Image (cartoon, rainbow, N blue to C red; front, side, top):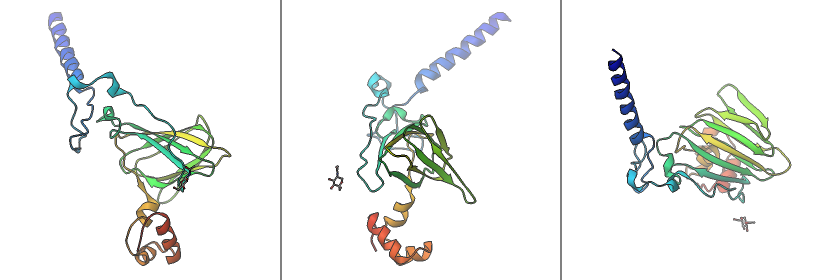
Length: 209
Ligand SMILES: *[C@@H]1O[C@H](CO)[C@@H](O)[C@H](O)[C@H]1NC(C)=O
């Protein structure tokens, strides 16, 4: 009986170990097309330590209308994240800066403030959840919820956001509504906004019509 036991355990672990060495990671081959289950893997023989580190995770350019700098490490610039279901963002806000209303339809986000003060929250069809965050504070934006962040402090603010996807998509409400060529009167009709306001925002977000 004991021998059986030991043989069984040995068989079990050898299966687990061989499985692990093949499937613990898959560094993306970005030259191949993406698939619903991620990018194809680079051959194990060509993977080195360099594949598992990322450099230049520094403040992004904040010289834009949102005074928002964004730096991301996702599978498209950090191929080792392929199939791992995780990625990272750095958000830098100048004084008065903000992240406009947006959603990540395919990822939950954890936002951790490391400098300054940020008011952040998300909307639901019936309510909102919002909080003033200081260094050491974290907020979670559940997958798909419309959310925002505003620098509500005196200086600059910095936060890091972790996503439950290696390749999260982002839909920014203003850009969806006003960065298009749909005629402004249709946007005004379907949003109940004033036509003049729609035209102003279209000019700001690169839309026309
Ligand atoms: C910020 O951007 C504007 C317009 O793109 C440009 O004219 C200006 O020189 C930039 N300022 C800095 C400090 O880079």
